[in-house]
Amino acid sequence: MSRKTGDECTFRQRDLKEAIKAARNAGLEHFRVDIDKRGTISIVPTAPGEAAQKQGTPNEWDDVLHDK
Image (tube, rainbow, N blue to C red; front, side):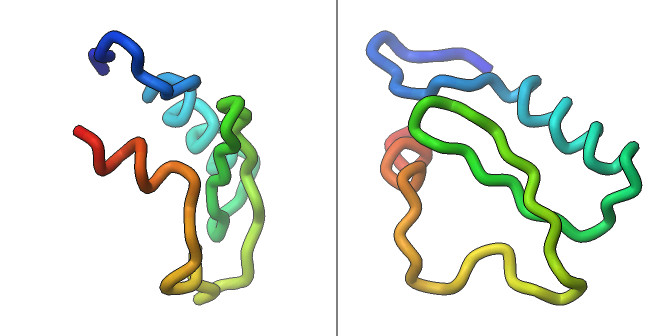
């Protein structure tokens, strides 16, 4: 994943892929991934069918990811 100068992203795509892979290897089937402003990746187990994010809930990465 290439980065622009001044890019605020503090994690890499491979970091996210590894976190998801680790969650699946640990036997988690239902989870969401939270990433804070510092780039800390958290895997949060969820109940089957639970929405990953409620509609209309602001997400700090929305601005960063839509600024492509």
